Length: 192
Image 1 (cartoon, helix red, strand yellow):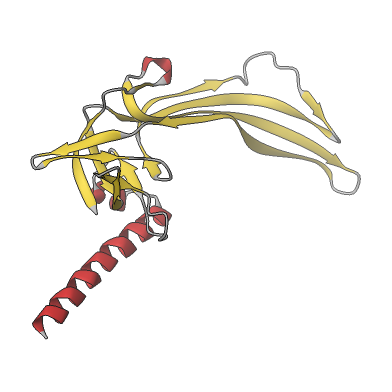
Image 2 (cartoon, rainbow, N blue to C red; image 1 turned 90 degrees about the vertical axis):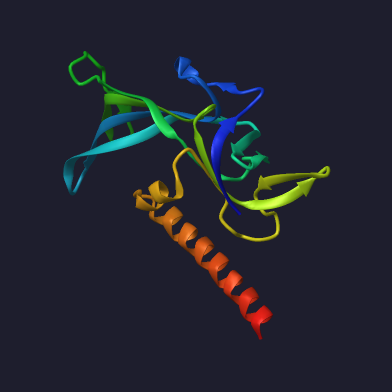
């Protein structure tokens, strides 16, 4: 099932860095290094290396509301896609940084990138998932039995398909194609 609407939540998360109330956030810090290695036969080589030093995310169940009503969404196991609300890069190349010694070489910190992505409360929401019954209530959630895509985003289906996420794009196209084929099969069965 595909549902678009407004994200609502009684007990939202507070995103890091005062980025606002949300139902999901992901906070990452990536350090970028210049690594120099020395090989007896090949001599010295330098390469750029990135290392994720922090990758923290959290999500809570929420409601997705449209003109026909609202439905509960359990984001566990979903491909979560939020908007970038805060990103920064810190250049440390001009700072006095002592190189970190590694086996057969050295490593120098060039900079850090910080990103906060979130799905904000009160903003638009898009969910592609399975409608399941839990304690007598319909919930959009990951299908435990089938390997169908489960996507929760603050972007529309069109924006997701236009994006650069090729793996997600293929899953969405397969899911939409499967829904169309399923509907065509039902119509054919009724008609004939």
